[in-house]
Each structure stands twice: as structure tokens, then as C-alpha cells.
Length: 216
Image (cartoon, rainbow, N blue to C red; front, side, top):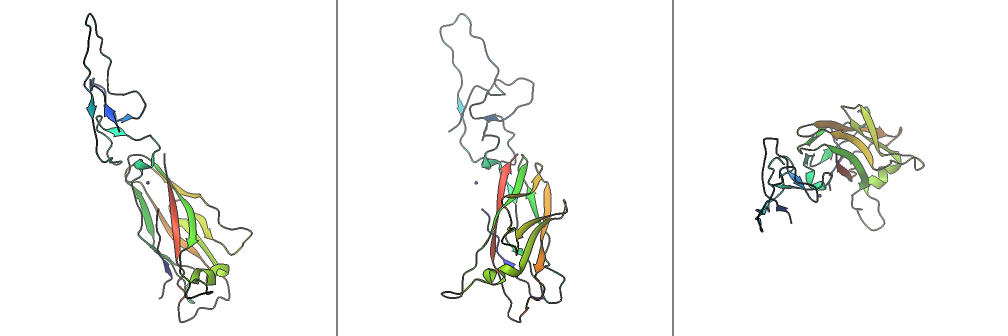
């Protein structure tokens, strides 16, 4: 069975104070916010005092921000985003299939913060065959209804419609993933209009599915 396919392309100086930790839990610090780890010390009957200043310069790991000596980005900074997504998504339909068929795909959140996942755009990425010619996506545009189906929530998100008065709207939320290991599963669904001419030489429309990530 021949399957139409498209390639999905996705498009994200600190210094430390004295570390005088008490028996309570330690937390990483945030820019411009009080240090949750440093306790005040009183200076009496002295004309000077020394405060250790400890700097840290390293790559931020959003999956394990547990070291209280490490700086944290702002709570909603994109640096917190760490998700696994497919490298491409396949879908297709033949004259003997009932609508579009597609494998099942997943998005997994590896970050220690929740992440809201949305479709930010879905657009033709094909190249016309010659001057004045159409891409395969343009050739099928007025006949194709295509949805992204969130299998866990059992909800369809329109990616492409045949009605110019009711086009797909973006951004549209797919779902929000909880921290560290939460997943959502999705597939593509829909179909071509009745009477579509399936030919021996397949149409292969190509699109970019653009995702948007928002730290929660």
C-alpha cells in the first residue's frame, strides 16, 4: 500500500551567594529572586565582613534542576523545554482504505516542568515541479480534510480543511504534559472528498507541522 508522506520539521551571567544551608530542602535559584538556600548572618562589633561569592557557568539541564548551587532560568523560559517528538509523520489513503490511515506517534516530556503542546502552523513545504506548476499539496488542497487526533483525549485538531470560509485555526492546543515522563499519543486522520481520482502515480504532498511549546 502506498502512503503519502510529509516531513515534519519542528522548530528554544549568574553568580552565587554564600551557601549557608539549614536543615530544610535545597532549591535552585532564579534570577532576581531571593535565594531560598541562604540564611542571613548577623555581624556585630566588627568593622568588616566577608561573604563568599560562588559562580557557576555550565549547560542547563531542564531534566534535573536539583543542585541548589546552580542557577535556574525564569519559570516559563523556553530553556525548560525538553521533549521527544517524531522526526517525521506518515499518512496516506488508497482507493480501498476507509479514509486516511496513519501510524501512532507520541510526544514525551522529559522536563522537570509541565509543557503545553500546541499546533502553531501546518503549511505546504513542497517544491513545484516547474515554472507555473503546483505542488502536490496544492493539487489536493481543495479535496483534503486532515486532522491531528489526540488518542488519549479522543479529540481532533483540524490541520487542513476544504472550506476556505472555515480554515484550520492556529495555534491550537494538543495537550499539556505533566513533568518527567508524561506522554501524549496522536495520529493523523481525515480523508479526501468523494470522487477523488486515485491514480497509479501517487500524489505526495509535503507539509511542515510546526509545534509550539509553553512551559507551565
